[in-house]
Every structure is written in C-alpha cells, then in structure tokens.
Image (cartoon, rainbow over all chains, first blue to last red; front, side):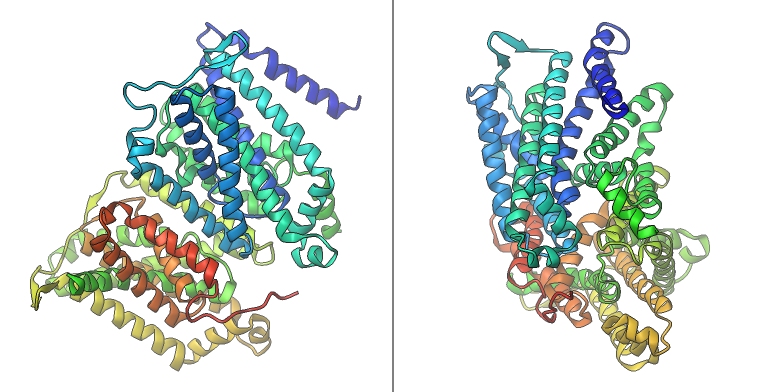
Length: 324
Length: 299
C-alpha cells in the first residue's frame, strides 16, 4: 500500500468509527453537522461531473436537489416506502435534467450558467407558488400529513447517527462511482470536451451526447441527496433551495479543486462543516461573516490558485507543463 | 387598462434598460458576464440614499437634491465598477472564460454581505424627492415619478449614444469591442477603454438605482439579484454587446412584465417567472438576440 492509500484508509476509518463516540455528549451536534456536510459532499460530487469533468458551468444545481426532495416527499406522504420513492425521484430528476440539458447545452459557457441560474430560480418560484402540490412556502408535509420511515428489513433509521451512516455510505458510493467514471472512456471524453470542445468534436467525440450524459448523470447525485435530506429532516420548503445554495456547491468545487474528487470532498468539508464547527467553538456572530469570507475566498482562489486546494493529478500536470 | 400597463411597463423598462447597458458594454468588449453588476446597482441605491441624507443636501430645493444625488450615485457606482474590474477581473484576463465569472460571483456575494452586515439587513425607505401628481391620459394616468424615470433614462441613453457614436473615445470603444488586438495595434489604450466601459456601466447602474429607489420607495441589500437578472435578460434579448439592443430589450422586458402581471390571472405572483422563461426561450430560439449578429465559433 502506498502512503496515499494508507492515509485514505485512516481518514475513512475516522469517519466511520469516531462519530458514535459523540453520542450523548455535549458534542452530539457534530454528528448532525457531519451528516449535512455529507449531503453537500454528495452534491459536490454530482456537480463535479458537470462543472469539473465536463466543464459545463451550472448555476442551478439546487433545482435538481429540490426536484428530488419534493418528488420523494410527495410519494412518501402517499405511503410509498423510502427506497421506491428515492428510485422514482431519481428517475424524475434525471428526466427533467435530461430535458433541460438537451435544450440548453448547445449554449456557450457563460450563457449556460445564466440559463441554468434562470431554471433554478424558476423551479424555486414554482414550488413556492404551486400550493396544491407542494403546500407553497409552508412546506411539506402539511399539517395532518406525515412522511414515511426509512427502513432496511426491520431496522428503522431514527436518529442523526443512523442517517449519518446512510449519508456516509451514499457519499462513499458516489465517490467510487465518480472515480470509475473519471477513468473510463466517458470520463476521458468529458475531459476532452472541457479542454477543447472543437478539438474533441474533430477527433470524433460526440460532444453533445457526452455533455447531455454528464448533465443527466449528475442529477442522480442531486436526487438521492434530496430524498435522504427530506426523510431525515422530515420537512422541506422552497427556501432550502435558493440560488445561494447552488453557489455554495459551486464554491466547494472551485475552492477544493475543479475536476478533483478529493477536491470536491475537501471543498464540502471546508465550506459546510468548518464554519459550523468554528461557530460553536468561537461562538458569537462568526457565522454571519461566513458568506463574506466565501466571497473573498472565491476571488482569491480563482486568481492565485486556479487549480484549487487539492487539484487532480491530471490537472496539476497540465498546469505545470504550461508554467515550464 | 392596456395603455396603463404600457405606461407602467415603459417606466419599469427604462430602469432595466439603464442596467442592461452596463452588462452589454462590458460584454461587448470583454465577452464576459459581469455578474457583480447587479450589486453595483444595489450599492448605487445606498450611495444615493447616503447622498440624500447629507445635511447640506437635504436642505436644498428638490431639483438640486435630485441632481446632486444622481451625480453622486453615478460617480460612486462608476468608481465601484472600475475598482471591481481592477481587483477581480484584470488578473484573470488570460485565464479560462469561466474564471472571471466565478470571480464575479465571489465579488457579488462579498458586496451583498458587506451591506447586509455593516449597513442594514432591513429594507430602508427611500425618499421620493419630487412631489407626486398624476397626469390624466384618457382612462389611464401617468405619475410624475414615471415621467421623471422615463425622462432621465432617455436623457442618459441619449448621452451614451452621442458619446459612442460621435466622440473619439466612443470610436476607440467601438474599435476595442470590434477587435481588441487590432485596436491595441492601432495605438488605442485598450486597458483604459476597458476601465471606461466599467465606469460608464457603473454610472448608468447608479442612475438606475436612484430612479428605482424613488419609484419603489424602498431599497434592500438583496434587491440587485432579481433586477440584475431581468436586466441581463434584457441585454440578451436585445443582442448582448449591442447598445441599441440593450435599450430595446429593457423596454420590452419591462412592458412584458407589466402586461403579464396585469392580464394573466394570479400574474403578479408568477411575474418573476416570466423574465426567467423569456431568458431561457431567447437563449434557445435566438441566442444572438433581436439585434445581435450571429458570430461563429473561432478555432
């Protein structure tokens, strides 16, 4: 085993074995923070496929988190079990994202960013106004309704720790899936598109097809995270899916290192978990300043360290070659 | 009713048009979406309010107050715009196209939270300055504020048009937008022209902010986002990079929004969806906009 694998092994064991130690201590909140961070990791891994690998700038990713969450919540309220509801939520979300992708993906980078931003806001306004389906700003489940439980055989997920493990498993699965994709023919096609679309087209990469594929696959991550989120929280309102949430996920990838899977995870930990833990440790009004700091961090990273904090090895090689 | 909505839309559209010009001027030269422009507009509103609350301004007659607030807001917004360019975009001139966009989002988050944390997180009343009266036009009426908004906007747009078409600086600007490298070779200081585009864009944004504040009577730290998106839609609709197009797009979006809110049942609740829907539709059907040229991808 090389040192990289060993450190990864210890890191993973830490995430598996340490959180239970916090149960029934004053630090129990850490489990919840880690769970939320895990959801962001899943989202960041999903967006990394479009933004990082294929280089498609998406500013409305939260819309798909929302579609996944709402579909799953509505089905769950109508008596579906968690797994079936999640499967349908994934199907619906991927389908919507496929439709959007098929129509907007021929736009240039910055236009695509604005179009997805527009779609993201439209989705939120739709969920906010469509009272009969989503109970509007009051959120789901409405009074008198309840969500289904999450069960495997006869085991029911009830507390934060249970959901933490569910999320951890999802995140690991997502990371492995991403890694396999990145090193496949598909991943190489995405990289080619990101680096030079015209050159990719000329060497025989079906650019539009692969772009739509990247776009659609990333929706799986968003939908699964959304479904887990509503079942854990037992509540969903349109306010959880604002434009700024989409920006947060983009920041995670940029700060962590575009295209890098380790970067997406690092970015999520830094941007989601760190401020919340610092808030508890430092206390006071620290949390209010966090967006201010993100804004500055985003500008600084893109100017001084465009490859991010944990760049992918391929990206690092490319950048070094340019500097030499 | 129709004429009334048209008048409302025209006033609204003039404000969008002024902001859209800021997007289009920058895009024309740098081919980048200045995402932070909406926050320059928001800051402009706070600059204008600050100017109006200066003790030596508030004692003056209404006309002088208006003029001073307009000039101060335009000046401060122009400087902000140019400053943002210098700090956040200039170092990225040779980076990938997405880099300045990400940087702009960073600036946007920063500015919004700056006002949220250090000025106020509440909505603040904005003085109307001029007396309010209405002019009857058949069944509909036009308010003094609407006349003012439309008049000031068109005056500024007239100035801009004169500047771009008739002055040598304007000519240099058009040359830079046409082909930056060629302009540089012909001795045009293109970096200064870029700064100038941000100055003018910022100034127009500041003017729009004052008019918008007077028209709606309140301002808030997050007001830039939605207005910014609509103005950007206007710029894209008209053909981004095209100055006449931005004005046309702004007026169209304003009129469309008021007609939608007036005629579609429950329209006011959904009115913010219209501009997003229009944006996506335009991008799909005619991405080069109404007056834009179709540019083929350069290898």
